[in-house]
Length: 297
Ligand SMILES: Nc1ncnc2c1ncn2[C@@H]1O[C@H](COP(=O)(O)OP(=O)(O)O)[C@@H](O)[C@H]1O
Ligand SMILES: [Mg+2]
Image 1 (cartoon, protein in one colour):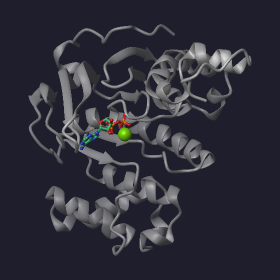
Image 2 (cartoon, helix red, strand yellow):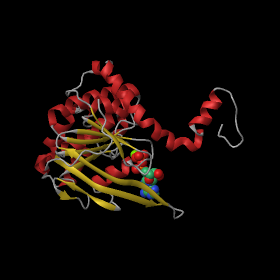
Image 3 (cartoon, rainbow, N blue to C red):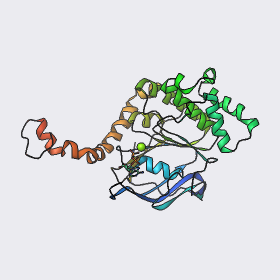
Image 4 (cartoon, helix red, strand yellow):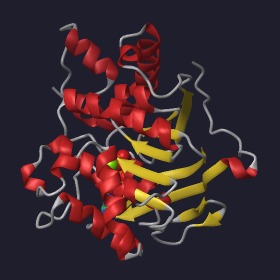
């Protein structure tokens, strides 16, 4: 594995499904303070690749994904999708899967998928077939007439995935889609996703905080710095898709995961350093040497 410490140079034109060019962004918090979130992020996302964004909590991953998806306007810089600047939501080109499943509780799973197709402007005559096809792809056919509260967390996320797949966009943006699930379920869904995507040739950006999920699923992993996020490194995961569960137990997997953690560790420390104190102070405390006044416990 060889992480590059800077973004890759621009891809030759048509290979890039998405280009992020010098994007910076700040929010104004309630008390009027300016919170800079993204610092000059540039990145090409190749057609058909699964790119993971990973970084400390609160660094700006969702902000970047929302700017790419046209849900938020960048403070400066621009994003192009298929060569055209994105200026707002583009449901024919991009679909989303969010962490909290966003299913309507009063509609069946089938109707939830059909409603998304309606929003996208798909003719009514096609909606039933497309929704059933997508539910079958995620193994939910027999639950199509159930309501969201009748499904487990994992099944609800599969339904959200079906809804995104039914839209047949070439690009899918996923923001921590498995974060609220237990570990076994998320590993299992990760395996399913790997199989599903190997067949689909979609371009995916997946935000995750799970090192294992990133290594298992990604073609490339973009490691973000602490806020304001910039790109710290890009890691190529050179493994074919679909990935087998055995990959997770391999030495190669452990190497990728360890390298990734080594890159992230300093950024996590910057993020939570105010809470645990400096590395040196923590080391002193661990060894029971001293606890200077003012040091965090
Ligand atoms: N709408 C908003 N208004 C003000 N601050 C925001 C808003 N959205 C996010 N932030 C702040 O921007 C930073 C980055 O947020 P986010 O992109 O959600 O981080 P991540 O997804 O990496 O956890 C955080 O400090 C967050 O509190
Ligand atoms: Mg987020």
